[in-house]
Length: 466
Image 1: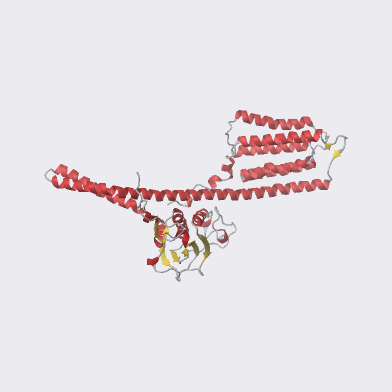
Image 2: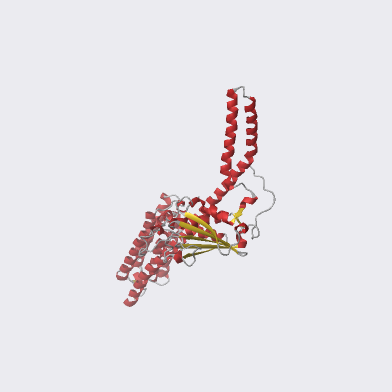
């Protein structure tokens, strides 16, 4: 069985790792766009609006960017991926170069001072928290220096284009707030997107592994079925040889060995073929059988499993047959694993079905879900709040979330609806303490193998091809 902990996501795909995904070519192209914009702005300011600029220094600042791009193109291959440190230096260089141009063209009196937000936003979406803090601090320091020190904008007539001091202070405050807010906003949204992408990748991996295990069981069982006849023939022939070779002990011993090994092969294939071949009947199973199959890997972990029928269920003999989909098996298995992790002694699995719905409730006698995370269960990579007083009592919850997210996603893909709660108001028919409760409900048509939307096929089994 594939556990959530076996899936290398989350920390392995953090901001530092994602910074290595950015190509140098992408940064070079963005810098060319910035250089073209800077040249256009300087040309328009001088020729159309008649502003007197320090053109030599302005072209020097732009030339440094051009030189940096040319060196990067000549030295590094096109498919070069930048490291976290290299990305930080690239963005920091662009930030300082832009600030130097603003210093030459009026500082915060220049409306293009708003572009200081660009490098910081890029850092928030692509780089680590440490790099983002460095760039934010640098941007705020540069904005402060530009508010105090800059070359003035001189018109063609020799006049100075200056805003009132109160306006400059307001622009500085707005820039600082925008740097902090846009950084926090961009980083928060990007982190959510990346976490969800990692969790969905883990879900796909878990489902693929579960499907492979199911398919492997089919191949093994097919082998057991197809090899049954030749093994029986070998056993029969070896038995006859053994009878005829009683007067030749050495050959009779070899014949007996062949007969015994044929029996051994039959037993091995029988044990390996528990999952069944690609048999039309084995694509479905009784509801309670599927639940017991999902719980089987956790039965030997020191907790007691109790399977019961709920008040809405009928006779066990009339239970529905449901489709044995890998996502259903794996999703239920993860839910039962979570119950076993936090149960004190017992896990109850209660099955219910009616003409319209099929449901299951999983109870444990642990402490239940902490109230502060109850509404967030199912979010990937969820962590407890540091201030939670119950954190020391339930350290297992630290970093939990991926396994339940996988279970929730897979079961919802099969048409189920999940609800998480705490006992005892929803407890099974027992006087024992009940902690966490998980209820999974399917419209019966979604998973019923006989009368659902995707009923099991009927007819002869298909021939298995080697």
